Image 1 (tube, rainbow, N blue to C red):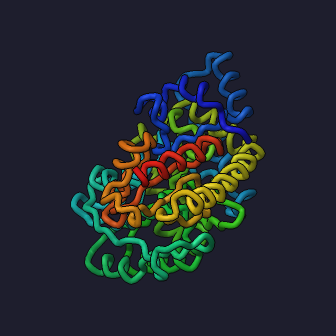
Image 2: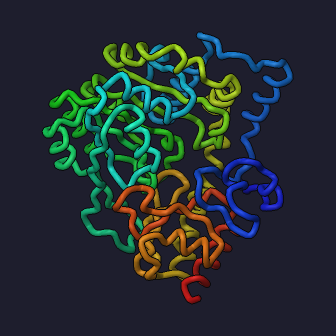
Image 3: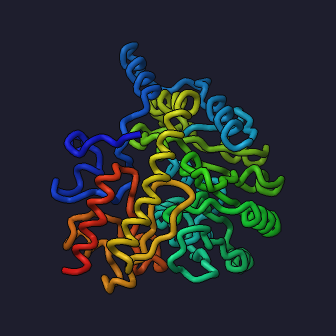
Length: 388
């Protein structure tokens, strides 16, 4: 799969291409540079041709489409009746908090983690408790197996102290780490023991690489089903964030009732065009997704080669999911916010690691969902900045 050329990309009006001047390479926000999947484009054009731009219907086929995709992709059997739609993953998270916790309850997050988590918890009424991810071997120059893991002891201590929910990221953003089945089972057991709700953000799951294994949280045990809600979408894998459609998935009557008790508008605000695009992605978009993953896996390896050759002071572990690289710039002496240095000296826009929490000091996140040429140019610029 080839990314669109920069001349075409710069005609896009999304955040990635309107946040910085044209002399900056935008490698920050989670948008890819690939052309829209043809089955999705075809479905959207057909909807426009029939002026099908009203409100979503109560029975719309999204649950069945996601269920079929989940079983084919992950062997996860989802009851279509336990799939509800909403505008996006963030809304699904916030509205689940509003039903699952009381205002002021503590909620565990596991930094370094997706920056909006720090806003979504208080928006949903919670107070953040940080239990950082562990890297037992020490973060180093590994180019193979990820050493990342959940701090299960720390999570349990937070539950003992009264935390009422855990906001899980699986696969983890920005680490590209699919949580292990052992960790997920342990989390489910703790949730059952302390009667805690687990919200699992699984939006990067379709982007799991061939050498990674995504395990849906709700699938690991009866305890996970009884205490969990999964929220996901086709938005990240097929680049559909602007179309506003996500799914909230449950696997028990208890949690189905929790989602069913949300205000009706949580569902009806789903975009009709987003619904059309998500159904097309889940039912017809798998060949395109597989081509995208091949390009991403090639890029993640290329990034390792480029860094080794040109910027060896920057350390990087290849992710097993998504198109996001968590880069350790501490060896370059670029300070707490290397993204600021990258932008100022190299005209490469990254995301500041501190946006992901205090463990991100000295790190930055880079999006490699682009052409190899753009990736090579970005590293070349960063390397030149390191000697400036």
